[in-house]
Length: 253
Length: 278
View 1 (cartoon, chains in turn red, brown):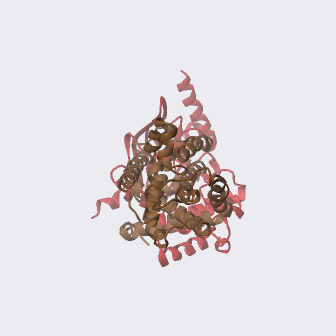
View 2 (cartoon, helix red, strand yellow; view 1 turned 120 degrees about the horizontal axis):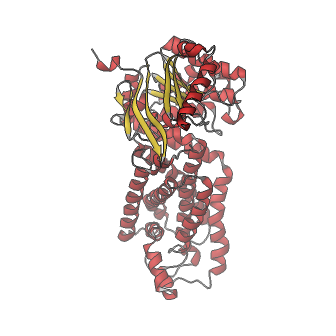
View 3 (cartoon, chains in turn cyan, purple; view 1 turned 45 degrees about the horizontal axis):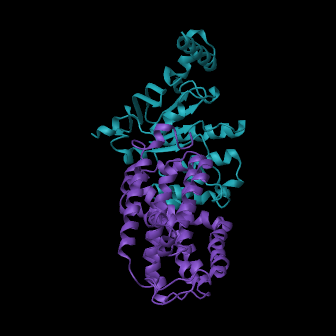
């Protein structure tokens, strides 16, 4: 039996990171199981983007361990990076290239070319409902359409883990719902594992695995429904406010 | 399509596809910016047709290698102006790296599973290809002027232009790794491009510099741009200048290695100071 087949999609153990004197991440541990939608909840400045930058190897971790499907990111970076697709918080498409050119560029960055890349691009354009815009420059797309293209791009090399950092920020309600629907359908239909960083509570469903990140620390983890029920809270948002208020009080003591 | 298929592509074919993709993107971006192409051409042509023509009588050049006879000043400055195009192109390519970092598209490049040095090398080669195209368009226009480059010289000079482009691109790459914001890059451009160009043998032969100032002569001699110009100048006239070749290759290797280290998340500056558009 292949040992790798038992490993979680993403496993982070005791990860800390500093920017100079500032501790941005403090002993963070987190797991994304295979085929599961995991939400990373945290307010702005909680450390979500720093955590994503380490998982995607933009920054190097000096303590702790990050592994993707059993591949240690520091030891086997190529194998680990090939398993993941990323949608960053900031927009990262080339505005003056067409949708198809952007996707083809990303395919080439993963060593995919020729007919295989073309077929994959067509499939993902169809899946994200943007086939009709394939020849248009990205500059002409709406915010929601650009985000859908970024999702298509992140999936071009058929990763098994998808990371999304505040993917719906700045979008209107309809576009937000659209993005969430597409990503959840990928989990349901294709068994994709997803880490979804957000500060918007209504994007999280009751059965989702949730980690709450605050001031660089994981202060709660569990099923969204269970976290919401704790302490007699009615909603996840109430529970989150109570948790972060407690954490703030402890920090100020 | 499973991941086992993806892993297999990170072989020689995968590298080729990746390089091709990066080069294609740079060419598409270049073609989308026609004013960039025009400005890259206008600059040296102004130097050649106005500056050099005006100084033709006052700045005569004696017989020095690789020339075997007296040459017009326009003929003397043409190799320097060609490499100036590469200097600007190299810095422009680095400017785009800083811009890519600010807008976030650099993140996409650096999360590719290919080794980081290979991605930087591909980016560098893409910039060199774009700059060499500009150089040959300039040389084509300049050939209607009395610059008298032997026809075979255009072909022989191609490797020299590639080496010069690699060196200047590597220097730009290293500069870009040390700069966090686009605004800071503008001042570095002023401090890098103009001193490199003027304190070199591009506009005047080194013996003339020495007549003016011994210190200036040594500054010019230590300037790697001087050696890039001389490598190209000799190649255009079907000759080889070993010192220039050694300096250009050595500076390329050192600056590229330092750039690769600087862009490495474990050892470079980016991760420590929260770079990459954080």
